[in-house]
Amino acid sequence: MTSSNITAPTQFVQVSEQRYAFRRFGAGSGPPLLFLQHFTGTLDNWDPAVTDPLARGREVILFENAGVGRSTGSVPKTIAGMAQHALAFLDALRLNRCDVLGYSLGGMIAQQMAQDRSTIFRRMILVGTAPRGGEDIMHLEKPGLQAYLNDPKLRGYAVLGKIFFAPSESSQAAADAFIERLMQRTQDREPVSGPAVAQAQVAAFRDWESVTGDQRFADLKTIRQPTLVVNGVHDVMIPLRNSYWLSENLPNAVLLTYPDSGHGSLFQFHESFTRQAGEFLASDSAAAPY
Amino acid sequence: MTSSNITAPTQFVQVSEQRYAFRRFGAGSGPPLLFLQHFTGTLDNWDPAVTDPLARGREVILFENAGVGRSTGSVPKTIAGMAQHALAFLDALRLNRCDVLGYSLGGMIAQQMAQDRSTIFRRMILVGTAPRGGEDIMHLEKPGLQAYLNDPKLRGYAVLGKIFFAPSESSQAAADAFIERLMQRTQDREPVSGPAVAQAQVAAFRDWESVTGDQRFADLKTIRQPTLVVNGVHDVMIPLRNSYWLSENLPNAVLLTYPDSGHGSLFQFHESFTRQAGEFLASDSAAAPY
Image 1 (cartoon, rainbow over the protein chains, first blue to last red):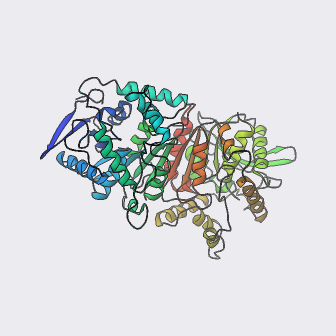
Image 2 (image 1 turned 90 degrees about the vertical axis):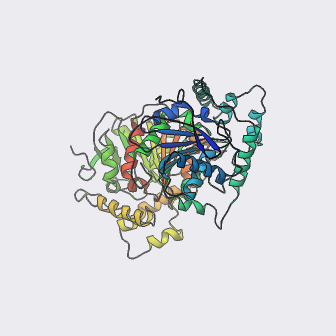
Image 3 (image 1 turned 60 degrees about the vertical axis):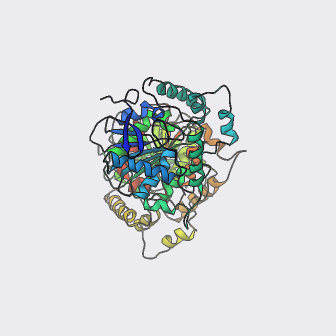
């Protein structure tokens, strides 16, 4: 067994007609930690500088949702549909309780899973994400994002370096290091997501932005798990106020924000993030402060 | 030498006509940590559950500003005036560099000191405070505060238990424990602040709320020190958005917010706070993330 996302083999599990791709590595006394990925991201988009240190205290399980990478099926157009797939995957692995690290899109799926099955998570880490009814979630048509998405000089991971990081010299240096780390995996890679994945996931973001129920954010009160909310102060993909709403309305959440960084603060400050996340996960208190 | 605020003797230092009261205890390899106190608070208002664990890694210095407790002189009506006293005090102690924990009013004084003398602080911790130009700073006339301040059944520390903590059962239990800890010191106590102290400090808050310069919060850009900003999400004395503005506009700040707590989050979650603060202070990185 290998303990790095650079080398961990992609595995597969079948649930009737559906096949899910995943990676599973690491060991330790903590409950397994489920990783739920960002917009269009595959298993190959998990930074080994984040997965590998966390895999030293517990098993980590990187999940590829339906229609992404080598997982079969079509990408659901709602967060609820994606949450159903993630729960079916955990059932197939016979895991009835774990921790979760939901990043961006993955953080929305994690919230939905916690509401659909309140016992599934022990502790939750929500990075660069938004509550249902949040604002300005992944509006790729914004000029600030279009400038990078339409730049013919930027291809592949270079785009991530712009939209996940801040424009400062220090943040762009961190972006370069992040991209180098992603490229360390050379074998057994996932196919890159195409426009169909992106379109369905954007539809899910638009649905997630709509306010449901009588009172905005009231659904967060039912998520009692100790939660760590994390974001970079310059996130342009899912702006910071969404993380503020999460930590103000979740009854049991600590918020940690990072300076000089954007959507990818966990990758930029991977040493701090994995230490903080590790200490948060190591706590068995009923309260989130750690 | 004792290493607890329950028993540390109050000391005095004279600067021409001015006498400052202070306490100094603890030891360790870290730079000394200066504590700057809240509205009307004296040396006796520092919770030993916060001072004592931090004193195990460094010397802590609790400072009583002019006109408070047994410090002579009159209370300045501006934060700038209070910052001058604090700098004069450090000069008298021949300290030209230290760390600082500024709480509420003390956090404003710390910011002013960093601007007046950029070399004085290595690292800063700002708890339950606001930037210059912040909003809703210590408006004791608000109905939500008046209900407690005018309640004849609440006296002394019992008022703090209401206005520093959240109304939840868990937060009120933490308030009771906080008050018990404050009462552990029985000898060599400071005189309680009267209306003259309160009136001058409120005048300083009103001045601090005014926006100066061309651009709101622009002065924060000059504070380059690694900074940890902390608050409870239910702070009614200096609401949370002031901490958001600090961490968004200070170029090198990490924000940590606590659930189920108010202005006194550092007292409620003293174990978490002293661990987080200790790890932040133990870092010698030029960047705030720890």
